[in-house]
Image (tube, rainbow, N blue to C red; front, side, top):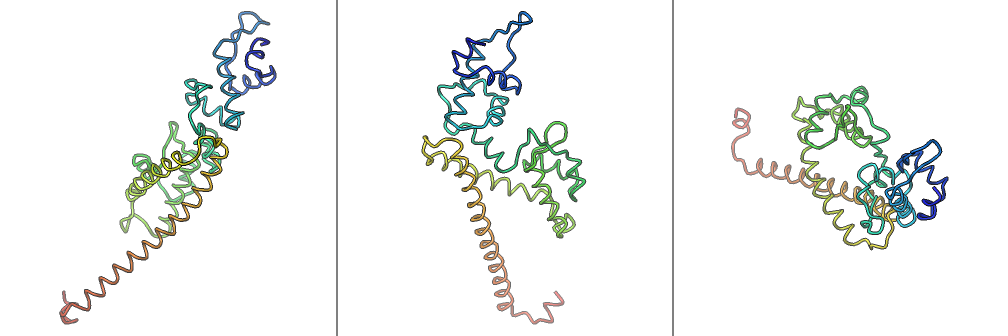
Amino acid sequence: MKELEERTGVGRETIRYYIRTGLLAEPERPKRNVATYSEAHVTRVALIKRLQQERFLPLNVIKDMLDKGGDALDAEHLPSLLGLEFLLSARFGDEQSRQPIALSAVADTTSVTLVEMEEMDRMGVIKIAVGGTMSKQDAGIVALWGKLKDAGFSEDIGYSVSILSEYVTAADALAASDVETFYTHVPREVNTMDATSMAETGINLTNEIMARLRLRAIIGEVAARNAAAVDEAVFDTTPIEDRKKG
């Protein structure tokens, strides 16, 4: 432990906390009062320290990253904006690993059936995890679809979950463009925490812009369709009586 402290610059109480919380693996214990730490411990502590000090990432985010393959990370050559996805998920309340929601619970609180949820999963609208759970964000999508059904947009008039595939395609394409622009133009020296705040603000504002653009486009499409119907009626010389018979 003393040598690990010296090589990493991190105190033993902090190291012990890392071990208790799963950030750091337990050392080998050849004897009851002897603990042996490896080079892997030195590397992991250095990585945690750098992610905290340079990227301003909280320990719960760092743990998520390390649990999902962080052993391949090099503390000396960290990718730009590393950990941004974890911070964004936390900002928007999508903490799947800590707060999974059972499909049965979602089905009990919405009019969406399990069959519909499975279809949503196949289309990529939501992701059902092993064990029959989903993230809070996905549960919100299911709930919104349930509200659409309750408002009359039911399968009886041709509204099935299959129409959501168009939204997935559009969202994926727009997201790819947004992320490419963000990574291209945000300065590399911006730390991950500040980048998260920028991204959060940008997502909220561009979501509102997109909603307004879509509303304008829908009204325009409705107006164009009605104008075409009026034109057809004006130029149709067939007597009204014959039109009714037809």
